[in-house]
Image 1: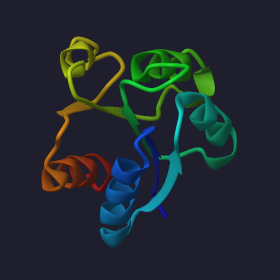
Image 2: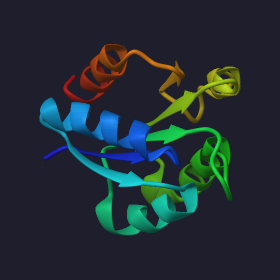
Image 3: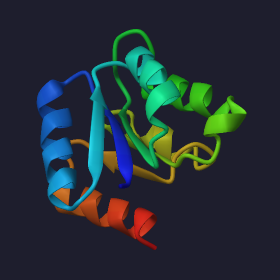
Image 4: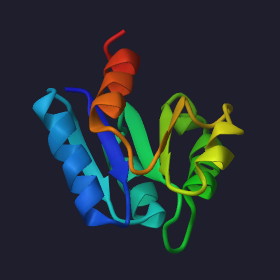
Length: 119
């Protein structure tokens, strides 16, 4: 089953996104921080990562750089969700395959995920 790692310190957003993606047949794992997500990466090896930008300890941009710095994770695509910082993610096409501004349309996120993972 295709696994998606969702990282957001706002648990309600992570849960809503998780439930919506599970309804579409994806397996999801959530993390409340980028540091926790780095631990999860070691055991889960997701097919896709969706991360928030603003989080305590490490931003989504710093997280993406840490992921891409490791050879074993370089092929995992990352998507970014952000309120005010979405433009920063759009400037980093080397890190993110898609960027969503918060509040996002859940249908748009699902369509992007499906296009990427079921192609």
